[in-house]
Length: 298
Image (cartoon, rainbow, N blue to C red; front, top):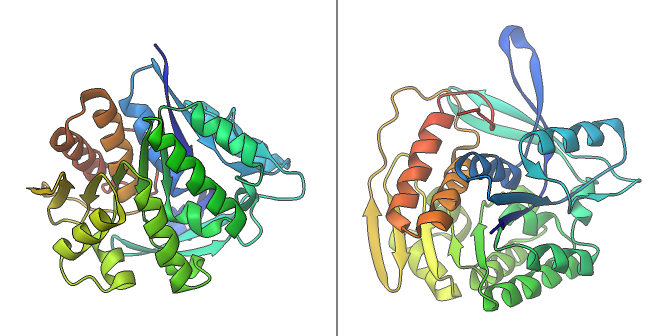
């Protein structure tokens, strides 16, 4: 029986460093990156699909082809004639990265504008995955409608996965950020916060603070990432700490969390074992940070 993992978010034009001071063009975005790695870990009996929006220009056509060639269905992709994809550039200092973005009028900001289309896509799926970036780029009416549909979907037994992936520059206000991240966590089966993001945005002093806050929102399971430190898993009032293996060669940490999430979901939906899924995520992320760019062929 075919099952479906649906990602909801934005894919962008990616410019990353290449040899000789040149830039390499590709396509990436946090939710799509996770779908890339989930597709690699799932059998062909699973469909991996992307709910997003692009334009009708040649670059949008190229992006859709790229996504399809990666084995991710674009059946729910909206095409918006007056819009174009967003763009970002990766800046590296050693292995650490920062980003410059050009996305204010991207087509993906309208991905949930058709509420009936959005609801149909979500209810066609078995597993739904989104991020804080998805929430941040959507207009208020659309993001509120999305949270209602996700609540309905979880009530119907679908697995809803959410990575808070906090990017403060995307949020109009800190109050909106806190409210919507809490709202998404409340309708999620599993959340993937990162401690450094949570510490900066919410003032958490310890990993226990972050775990307790997300459990308080109503998230069923919390998988707290913390860079090279251990992963903390909180479920049913109990916390398990899973050490992160050492990675000898780190070239670029872009996509580390996204790849962890994708590999985790691929393992978890097949085996139902949280610890095993965390280890799958750690293994995948460890390979990805040994290469440049967000998308690596494993």
